[in-house]
Image (tube, each protein chain N blue to C red):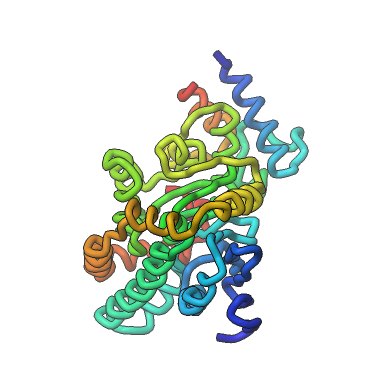
Length: 275
Length: 80
């Protein structure tokens, strides 16, 4: 990794993200333009974060994940990097590379999902694909009223690959899951709260402040009780998560997906994020 | 119930305010991507603003092929 500063395990500043611990709250800030796309740099730094978590958790009761970028929380996987890499190697090798990436990101997200802390995603703007999946691993989602959620993978001939389907099923009714996955449409924070996905909708720009207030409130309660309750009510669907990787890799091997990726990456259209 | 013209006026005012463009520079039938100088991510912001303002839900696939404010107003009006 380059351009990062190790400031002791309690603080880190990287290219894609940074973290610090204040008053028992770990704050993980995403800040890689254009919109925190999750590629190899972000994944490497997320792995660095989860490696530090054992230590960070000792003195913390909550984790807040948020974005410093105006553009939004996270637009998902770095499709440009994915496409570029798949062009330089033979298809079978490309699929193996994708599987490796998925297994690594699943390891990271599962670790955050299971953290003995109350985890809060403070989101605004675009929260798409892998970004939506990152928010879904958290116990609570606090969204500002400009947040927008989507699983656009269907538009590329894929399904969510970072654990989105099992986690969405964990949280929502099946009819809603079908609507989101089969239409690939985006929906706003008000709708997200109506369907039970988002716990609080706040004014534009206020998600982080409200997340901090919520984390402070959580800090008043016995941590062991909170951890026990979380383990009881929020199981991690390991079998389904592994199955999702298999299905994703099978779909990725098709030429239709390569064509869709090429179209997205090479588009000069104003509308690549619209269905 | 809102008339189509009132809906259109409100959309133009909201778009001008959100993207800090003079209202008089926007006309109902011109390409709003060009008029506002926006990309698809910013279009989604506009969609969110409109949904919040009109208290409707407008699936973004309804925006396929929509490039002018008047057509956009028609889509919103159909949900009121």
